[in-house]
Length: 320
Image 1 (spheres, helix red, strand yellow):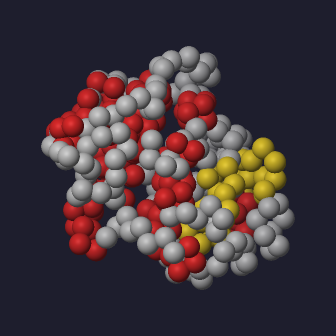
Image 2 (cartoon, rainbow, N blue to C red; image 1 turned 120 degrees about the vertical axis):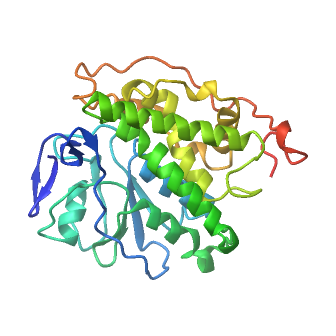
């Protein structure tokens, strides 16, 4: 395994502890505090552009106008011998020396921590502790915790649509967000076949929905759309090749690919996507790509037009 054991770093296969009998099973996150004091400058996100879960939090930070409220530290795209690391030590507040490795945040929060060390991390600079390391919690925190400070009342998880959003989230997480990992990390043909089939069945389901709907859960963007986006934006660049998710490219789906371009072109979103980091990171997983060679292709262009005439008068390039 690769992670912490009783507060000590152990280097190894970054996915080994999550593969059982040839199938990938994601570990549960451990820090799940959701109540915080909404103060500007108190909290910090530790993320990687490689990681789709971390990208969720960067997106919500951008959409909610929190750039001056919540600081960000970005890890290197490749995972080193001590896990996620930073090119230069990162200031994390007065209670902790500048950190070079994400695992330092975990041991500062629990000196005897045993388990996986992941991003994103929402960090409290005042207490020197992890608030939360579960992306689904963090985006809900960012969605409303700082509204009184910013005046930004955008609600990406509105009460009247929560049942529909949750339904989409379940399909997307199990079969697409996590489905690409179940496919790429499968160690038997049987588990690979099951995972890749479920993945593309789910993509087909979303494609059919988008043929007659502009977004997933209503006529405006919600949490469900952004949770899907982080996998879609990595799909042709990384998952299609490195993870053998290659029954079809995302470009082969006319509605999904147009929807992806629209979301990418939404104000503030392209800055949360770093394709060179994404490609370098996924192709650096040596047991998947022993040579470490990063392919030149494919060429992707998310800035192309995305006319959505099929869904009515609201359609058009970046119409709101």
